[in-house]
Length: 178
Image (cartoon, rainbow, N blue to C red; front, side, top):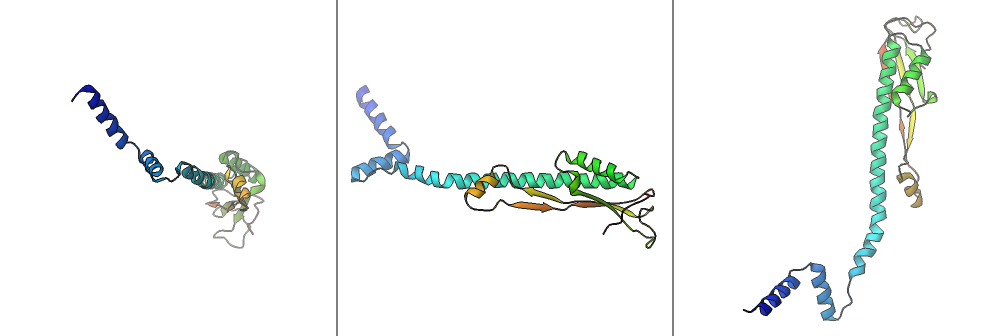
């Protein structure tokens, strides 16, 4: 076989082993049908925004889970500090510091439950200090705004973690839990 014939065979083999899309377009032209190259682009244009919103909702849900872990840890730390005699304002400040900017003082409640000496004023050794947090997370990392475009209300998650610890010292003027 001469060089010219060998080149034709290789060129012909490359055409046959090319992508299916190219072969499909060649078959369509040979059968007299128009090429379907734009159909996939139109389908992508319809599906891509939905996939993008779904991805952002997943990211937002992950952020919500992170906030839940952070505020649960902050409540536990506040209860630990309250157990050793810190005042209510000190406990609230510690919870805010531990939460890293997620909470403010209006979302934190510190109170005391009566322990084994029921009937005696709360705040004695053996009673419990309870740190409760009421936090509302609204989806925002893009998915909240995009969901409103589709006439879906922006979701939110109410989180109410709390922690209790037994008092090691007496707290004068402790507020009883409701």
